Image (tube, rainbow, N blue to C red; front, top):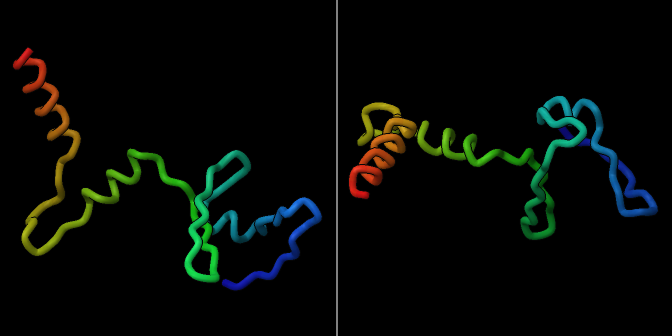
Length: 84
């Protein structure tokens, strides 16, 4: 999808409705801007929980099943409490 927009006098650009819908952003959503050489990439910001979910959902050939991160966190917390 390639869309052309004009930068306004305050340096602002309106994100077209179709693009907002495609990215799942709405008024009040946070977005990230990444500069790559002479390009700028805009993407929706992810919550820390979403970032962790995405990371632990990767299954490699050595990893036979999805990591149950919530269980790991609960076990670590229980161990920490037992130590105290």
